[in-house]
Length: 272
Ligand SMILES: [Zn+2]
Image 1 (tube, rainbow, N blue to C red):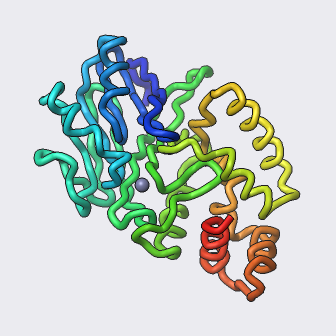
Image 2: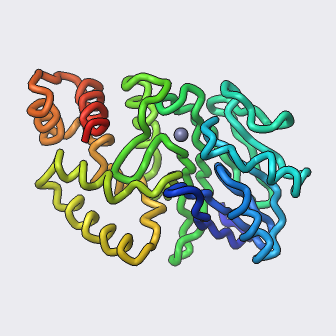
């Protein structure tokens, strides 16, 4: 569907390596996972933006810590959050798996995906309409919080490896041109791990070089895309023979299912 809007999505840095994503359409602003209020307030003031909505992916403080303060300044902003986790604001709109809702200020409709693993109630926001690329084609948008990172996936604080595997599988099924907006700049260290697992993956080697250059200049490596992640991120590649063989060699035991390969990779990464 063609849209009459000029959406921009860009990161606001917070804490050490968090990104708070700022989505704007004209002078209206939506933010995703504001762990801190100050950097957001600063950008809103500089650009004279009105905060209309806040999207929350999960309950961790580095994703929700700024909500209260932002609502003090923007009391009419709507807060969207996972239904099965502690709500970050009393009037938050509680979202369940497969819910859809529209943000009229952006002209975007979001599908809610429940993606347990990092936390049990973690949700992701997917907009199929997405944003226009330079060629005038719409690219879908995914805000995935701490579930999928470029080259990695979230730690299993609450859920099981099996839950995380299925959550990532849902992302794998999204269109390849989906832009992936992760909540942390972990890409370079993640890719170092991926390279250890898959030393002969040429796409991965190439991307690792690109990322090293970007980071040298302090440039964010995000957004990624689903197509790129399927090519370079070992956590989406448990079905690949070379990845399975590497995980098997590392654990010293036979891993005859993709889920077992995935679980072994997650444990390996934890101690990497
Ligand atoms: Zn988290």
